[in-house]
Picture 1 (cartoon, rainbow, N blue to C red):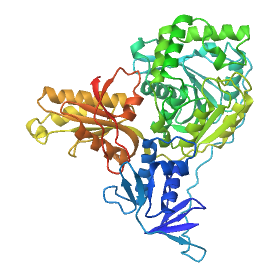
Picture 2: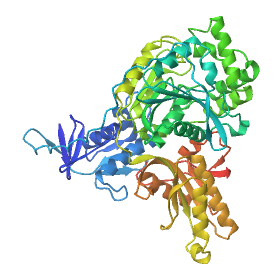
Picture 3: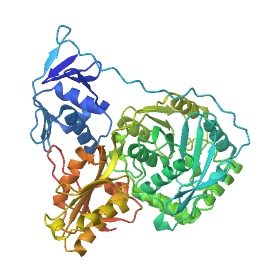
Picture 4: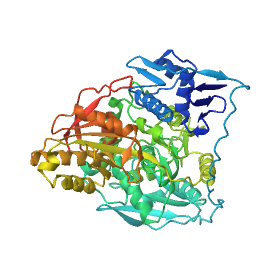
Length: 567
């Protein structure tokens, strides 16, 4: 069935959208939203109705739905303030305004789609010979002032960065025959890159309050890739390594060929919209278990049940944990991971993705893998039998074979024009630059110091973007503090989302618009952030107080905001 409205033609069978002779690309879930609304023109479609019809038995949070609506509006060139196509009824739902006509075979001739630009395929993957007892040397990369331990094995045509969860120890990987066999098999079709995140294993130990946030872990991955000359890689995240891998893929699509997650999750603590994780009380009990029993095989029964009764494996697991982290570091990492929530980020992943999950996983439920696969555009879900959580316990080949096929078929895509970024807006009094000629220079220095880019001081509110939310918050806080010292009452807003960038690197689009609308909520001398930002800076030491809700045109629900209190 084909539907026409305005200058657009929507083919529901082929799942394609054209504007006259130009094909408009839409993410799968955004297409679902548009197809449903156009099949019910003039009707008020309630939010719950839309979710129930399009994603039955699946939780879709308000931010994810708003993001899909924004994608549709962008494709149609529709202004939410003066809509021609999609009208938002706050707290009620959406209504498609344009007249819609159904076209049959005798209708308008389907425009010919533009020729697809061919993408160069990766070289044919041929297994490289790996000696059965080969153990790679350990090297170190500089990430800021911290040394990150890494190893490289294999000579395959594609780089694979292996991100282990929770704690790790590079050299103890190889002491367990099953783990060693798993890694050698990965290296047989790739150049395998392994590392210990800061504060664990052979990397520099850091004070507990400096254990790595997701942002710092991204820096560590990038530092290791730079050290080994890796331009782009498939990122393979295991368990707690999954959220980092998602954030890295969304933030650095230019460095990510593909994304594979094994037994991972989007949020660690259960809540109303995510009913599978442990409760806060259960998480606290596990932290108490770490304090009480670290040094023994903590957590082995749910992470490797098929091996839990093997004395040699129990001994290796206990030693591996001890070598990987101190009890204080293990507990701090567990608490930090419990605060992370990457649900709003999933829809921004643009690279090919595969989610692998065992259906009987006792540590992280298979529903958590399904949740992520349903929200990452085009993601493939591979469900496997078994109860083991760690991938090297239990049958290995059923995990490794899909990864090998994924790596063999992944293509080197053109450079992306969009990426996940954290945007900072600062409201500056109109006379500040005139009264203080050095004011703009100081602002630029602050942005550069915190590794911001695309600083735009020509607008009414200076604007910059960052590849990490904690850096963005600290930059905004520093700018506001500097303004107070020089008699300029500034206020700032911070939000994370998918952005497009101008030729000068200045962010534009929906995320930028939202950030600008948050600014008026802040008081002079204050930095206010969205919930997305707050949930991504777990472990950073930044503290917040609940601010008022923000009512946005085109959004069904008000947005919770948070003021920075300690930075």
